[in-house]
Length: 142
Image (cartoon, rainbow, N blue to C red; front, side, top):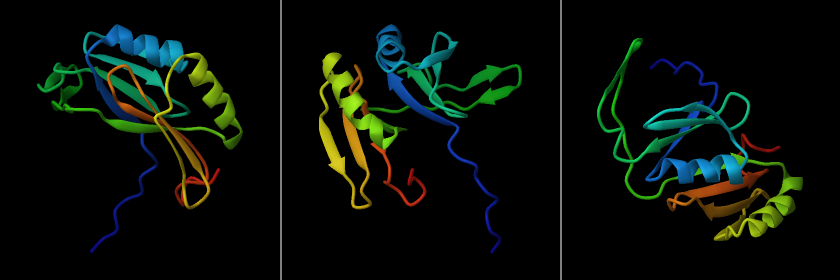
């Protein structure tokens, strides 16, 4: 059996929302992400070097979409989803303080066996977001 070719990382993570403008107010206004693409069914945000957060309008992505370069297969998600942002250990307290000033509740804080810490909170659509400081995974040690 042949080995799979290497993967260089995750390029995109998607979240599905009901109100695009409310989502933009949160992801750009609260989290400070820069919007790179604005469309009827999709906003794309710079989530770090080579990483993109896709914010899709829920209910508008199930059908295939024809583009000049080819067809994008339909996809969707139901219920709250989850993704994590990487942060430095020294940014845990500033993030705790910042979320508090923005009246965003930290719904859980986890100290992982490897020693890293995660702060969990929700976006306006109930998606669970995580701010993760290393070490957490064997490939995320800081």
